[in-house]
Length: 260
Image 1 (cartoon, rainbow, N blue to C red):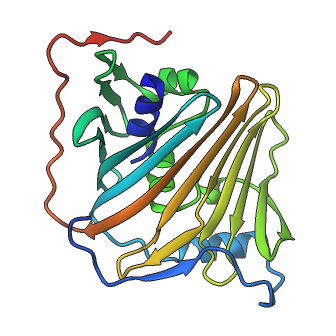
Image 2: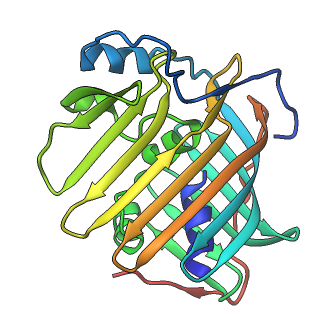
């Protein structure tokens, strides 16, 4: 449970709800999909509007693995490209909190009274997946995890979606699925062959605001030799460009976690 709370607080980063349009993230089977080069698909993906300085999200989250299931609520504050603050609550009580910047990660969880302060290298090793600030922010706003302009990709059409596969033939394989209607991310997968580990992030529905096209829900599924887990995150409300505060302090008496 404590690792789940830490994962929620770190990886999942709306009082006033703007007018929005909810759309399915999956293309309709009868719609024709044009042939298109990978570079053009990437250009179209990044042409989607993402114009905000701050983002405030209220969400519900459900975690389930082979042994347990848990429902919590989450408050997510984002100062674009600078800081993410996540509070995870159960029955109104803050059970975990995380402050994330491009240079550092800090979080605490209440059940065992522990906290972590460090960078992404140690945290990535502990969680079993490569993380940095951009990946977390991109996942929360529904963009491709990596900067696609920095890689090389092969393209195929699959289930009426454009799929880009990382041309790197190393241990880590990455695939990105795009809706042909608006080139938003429908799904993205990371497979680590040697570790027999898979992470899949899907966006079943999206919401179009004037500031950005955001996920309405996020489904994260992981599979590894130790078992499977699933996290479902549903955004209840969002607001843009408010003056936000990012208070964070570790309660007295908590024990620091050292990750080697």
